[in-house]
Length: 187
Ligand code: 5GP
Image 1: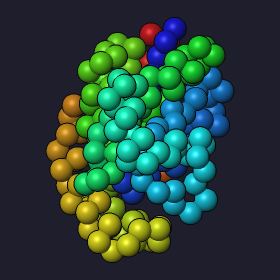
Image 2 (image 1 turned 45 degrees about the horizontal axis):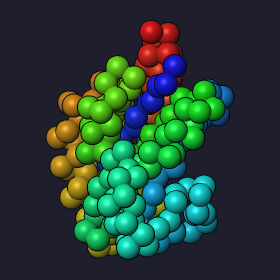
Image 3 (image 1 turned 180 degrees about the vertical axis):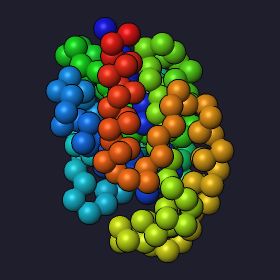
């Protein structure tokens, strides 16, 4: 069955860590690799972490209707899900995992309905989120300020998800998420 599980959360809430843990447990899960027009960070590789496109290449793919959904997540920076990527994963019989921004997550749930399980990972607080972003050491202070402002908005959208998991304690958040997924897959 063609299914997808959507994870959305403010940047720095621990979503990516949780998703990576789940990928280890469920062998049929495959991460949807998004396309983006931002530059690679650190050790990120093209076709592994993202499909890195120039802004022009991205806009061309939009014009050619190659995206299921796409968004200008930050001013001048595009992110999107390619139709070809979803097909690639479903063709193998796998379940698609999305690690996507909040508006993208809400859009995907609206598009795919019962095929989709959407989970919002909630940070314990805005202060803790800011501490984690600073501690990660990958973003400049003005980028962190932008992400914190965005997080405040995104938290107001949590109610649109099927489930909300608070990541206060990582192990607990993972266990809670696993039980949500087991229920979804058993349906
Ligand atoms: P980052 O630059 O930190 O990798 O990601 C920035 C934001 O873009 C995150 O909130 C991430 O979830 C979101 N994002 C990543 N891929 C996609 C996508 O395919 N579509 C949308 N709408 N957002 C995405």
